[in-house]
Length: 231
Image (cartoon, rainbow, N blue to C red; front, top):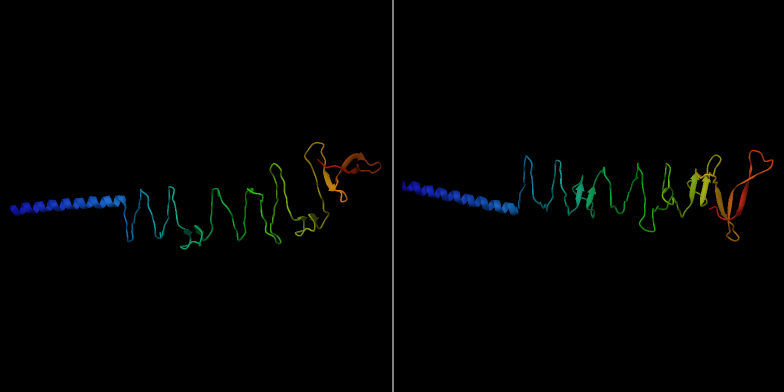
């Protein structure tokens, strides 16, 4: 009987010691846990607190992130070695369904294709910079300038028609009749050309007058050239 009581006390001691050990380990795991070996789980690994990963992380499946995440190192997509000196290295195509905001410089080594509306603004004295060389900027469709002023300024030559190498500031060339067409949407408004006299810099305006040439036929009118600007 005495031996039985001793064994019972020993059993209680063992149980108490085991309980204390479990609580101690649980307390350590709740505060911070360091695992030196691999973790393999066939189910879902759920972490409710903050997690810090200092080594390499390899995902063979899908990584789903439902909240904000902070990555302090470099990230390589489709490659385990991100491009040096770049925080994000993507080896392949990128598809973005939303907006791409707060972007500094964009460098394209290939073709930049834009299928939607493109707005190019500027935050300093320089706007769009085009490198020198033949066919630096190619527009296969219609180039439209809008805005409060609708101005298009260039320090080079502009070629229209079938020429890619204009010989003057404004050059039009084609295989058929080349036409310079000036129109206006205003009521009782006409078209006007401004020319500068070479000897004194006086500005002259050239426009179609209201006077009809007698005997000219076909409603021929006088083309006026007089000092003054068009507007």
